Image (tube, rainbow, N blue to C red; front, side, top):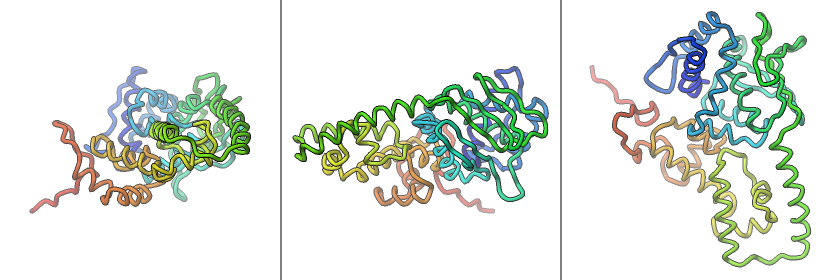
Length: 339
């Protein structure tokens, strides 16, 4: 991806290869972005010299960086389908040239295509890098007994029993099928939701009274903690009610003092984004993704609505100075050089 892959994944390539005794030097640009041609050249050279297998294994390093907000947002996925949707949203934020397109989905499988602009598909090395990341993250989001095949009419298994196998040369590398026996996260959440739905129905049939103030404040505080813990989730009032174990209509009333569900969610996301912007350690696009906004215009519009500043301007005004740290390209306007 244009920003995130250049800044993060290429560094992970270098680390992963070093762990296998292979020394390579990833290109650097002094910022978050690299020219696409330079990135592709590096990955192609790695694949030519060492094959695709080391690139497929790069994703195993992702969970070791949970402090990175984008990685944390991906690791917070509640099930495999949610993970892929979060990845697709990250691609939108970073204006990725290549996109993961869902072709088929089911209870225990996903078929996706790693596609590019017409006539410019991803290289096999780029396919292997993204496939390795998704394969490493899927088991952490509940996918048990994961198997991954590559190709269309005659698919080849590249991942099973927890290990990768490099695909043969000339295998179509951009069509992937993920299959798992069951999803722990989906099953446990579904069981809890079914149990609570029964309780909610009985409760709402016998009472419509508003709980005392102390309970109202407690539910609002619990709701805030849940939203803060995973701002990247596609939250709805119903999903939040299930997590809290309260009826949806009751939760709606209890959150009225916090501006309602939408108001509370907007406040939480704005506060988290503001904190990350002030730290100055991550690009605006990564921050917007990690805080749950749909895309960059959505982030800019809603953040400005609450702070009267765009994210970039907010960062330039309030960023906390840290000695010795280089500025991100989006932290402040570039100054024009005089001849």
